[in-house]
Image (cartoon, rainbow, N blue to C red):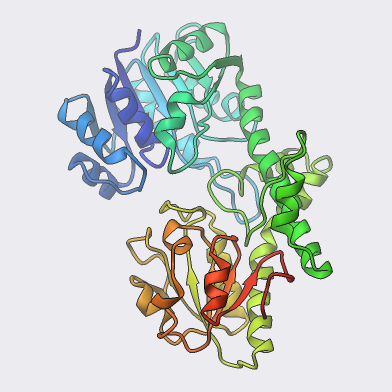
Length: 427
């Protein structure tokens, strides 16, 4: 049984995973190239937002089971949980995985286990990690064991899902899988399914690609509904009462480190075959521009030539602080191209990440003509017209997430526009 872990990458997945193992009795050393993040964690402060993380971090540090630095240390098990973004040409950027693997080579010893948790294109373990790990001089599969066990958690519910979700383990051989299963059984209550490394990589990409294709379908339905006078949200809800139908919801685009990225991995590997996947990606990537053009159209219908938009929400998902691949940032870029002035506010983004971001709702809505909701934070769901109407120049609200109480806003004299529903819109 492993006694010490070294976790490389202390972001939204690596840090919760590290403290989870530390709080279950293992000695854990966390590694990150971000010196500021390391400094904060060492002082029991967070550089990311996640429910339950603060108290778990404090416990892990206080009980002496969790240390952090910018360099790896010798351990029984190495877990790599670093980003795997896409390049501008939509190809996978595996430099983080490659460099993280290189960083542990001097510390790997006979009998160690190396686990990749990052979501990656199929064959990354075989084609990227193993060639680097052979530099240890150890026999892969005999002296050194390697597997892929992709994370399967959602921001905001990471700890709940780390414990309860089923887990996929794909080893390069039977012993690699056995050791990995033994490790995760320390806290995982869900079933652990064993396969090979490349299949495990494919499984995770499939999961996120399925969701992306489903959302693209919903976004097409929203556009069609606007043209024919149907409420797409109501229609999807009713269709989902069918026992074999599960349509996702439309919105201003798709964000996050997985759904907006992973489908491109399959397109890159087999571009001639990934037709539906590629079309879905382009459909979802088109939604920020569609949203911005709709804002421009709303202003034109009201005869407003130099309008100002208060953009509410920068995170890619409600009630988190994660802006990775957020469609909100693309909406802002398209508003700029269209010459539409805006301010942006997100109660979960504490530091200014964009130029026109404000740190107060009051400043964001001052003299605005439209409230544009791009993220369904609870703060926006519960927002009352009385808290903003006196500060706004024109009373319009454009809800792309179907999260406001429309009747209250209409009763307060607001023109209400809902993405995917021209019938419900009052403009």
